[in-house]
Amino acid sequence: MMKFRKSALALAVASVATVGAVAPVAAGEISASAGVATSYLWRGYDLGAGDPAVSASLDYSEGMFYAGAWVSSGDASAGTEYDLYMGLAGDAGGISWDVGIVNYVYPTGDYQGTEGSIGDFMEMYIGLGMGPVSLMHYSNIETGEGYGPADSADYSYTTIGMEAGSFGVTYGMHDGGFDDYDHLDLSYSFNDSLSFTYSIPMEDSEASGGEEPVLVASYSFSL
Image 1 (cartoon, helix red, strand yellow):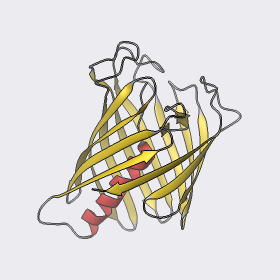
Image 2: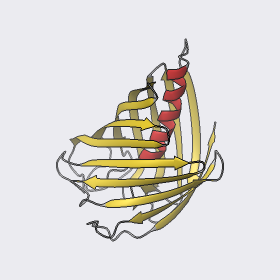
Image 3: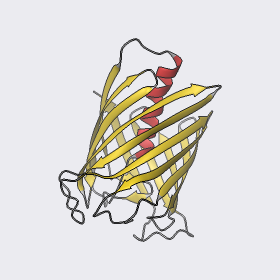
Image 4: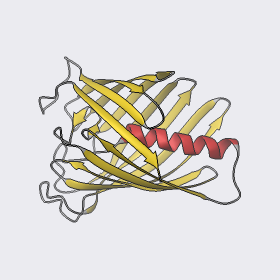
C-alpha cells in the first residue's frame, strides 16, 4: 500500500525552501533528522495499526533545489519504506511555492508481491502558501503491479491547511484509489520536537478500511 508522511515532508521541504529563497547560499547544505511516533499516520490512515514507528531523513538543499530520502519502519503491511524525493521551492510576492516528485520503495515488504520493487508508484506534488494558509496537491504519475488501492495511475490527494501559533488544522481529500476518503487532522506542537495529531474521518467518506479517529504523538530531533 502506498504511503507517505506527506505532511511532515511538506513542512520540512517548506522550511528548507524558505531559507534558500530568502538567502541563497553559495554551497549546498546537508541536514539529517530522526524521530519516533506512536503509530504511522498517513493521510488519515493508521498504517502502523497502533504500533510505534521509527523514522529518519537525510536532505540536501542548494538555492531553490532540494533532494532527500526518508525511511520508516512503521508500515504494518508493506514493511520498511523509503521515500526518495526532489524538487524546487521558493517565495514570490509573499506566496510560497513548492513542486517536486517522490518515489516509494519497499525493500523488505511483501504487500501483494511488491517485495524488492522500486518505482512501483511515484507522485508529483505542487504546493502554494500564503501566510497561515497552505494548499498541497499530489497526483500519481506511475503505479506498478501489486499496488492495492488502485490498479491505475488515476488517483490524487489534496490538502488545505491553516496554522495559528502552535495549533494547526488540515483537511485532506482522497480521490480515485481511496474511495474518496476525506479526513480532518487537528494538530498541536508542544515545541520544535514534540507534536500531537488527532485525525478524524469524515462521516460522508467512503473509506474502505473502517477508519476511526486516531491520536498520534511524535518526537523528532536533528542529527
